[in-house]
Image (cartoon, rainbow, N blue to C red; front, side, top):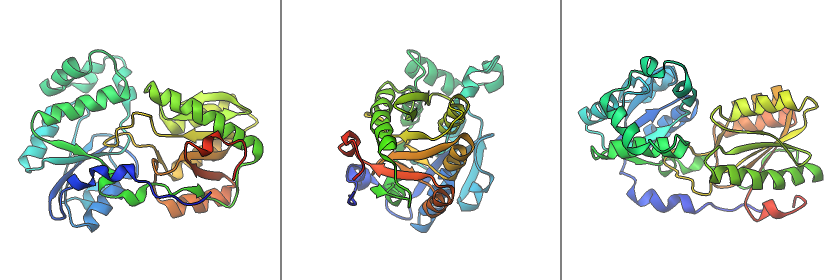
Length: 304
């Protein structure tokens, strides 16, 4: 499998603000916000970080010119904070834990402000799919001329390269699972359910939904006690790269190790790999195969 250069992500780069410009970061959980902040800092951007309470990494403040936190359901508060700091370009990074939206007494727990209620009723009343909710957030911010960009416009080097990334390669039967899982994963992505499918012997063991990739992998381990399954993670056919970009990292491998996963297949040029050297070193240590492929290769019956 020869290397390729992903192209489609760079279409928006012409609109990327020049270094020295103020850039906002609306941060959820995980390593991605830290990695983005480090990249933005190196490029000379003045970063203003706003983290979601209970989710944002504590160390994010170390990489921000200004930093604060905001409760999940306080869109109006977030908008006012960015406007106060004269920020009109914002990036989303990090996982937003959406299960809180389905807890009992959610209105009392979340205490949404008026802008959040407006967003919910105007833009997200038909359904609560991931894309619906995140696009609703973007639209509410745009009412105040605050525009969201893709993190990949600032750090495209995070995109995973094409090819076999580890010493271990998938076997013929595992490659068959990859091809089968790819088709299933693209379909659940089209339906905006999730991005990840876990497969063993051409049977779907688990499908990612609101719980996220790691918990889906752990559930697969409970259902497939013998282990040896394949995790396939792809972009949605309608992927909006301003949010919810497929991402893997060390924790993905830790979850696979605990559950018994043996192969991780991702989409070349469409997936972010966080802390790549550490991820590949750990994968080789654990004997997990990681392969980054494209749609044409997903149709092949054997690995090239």
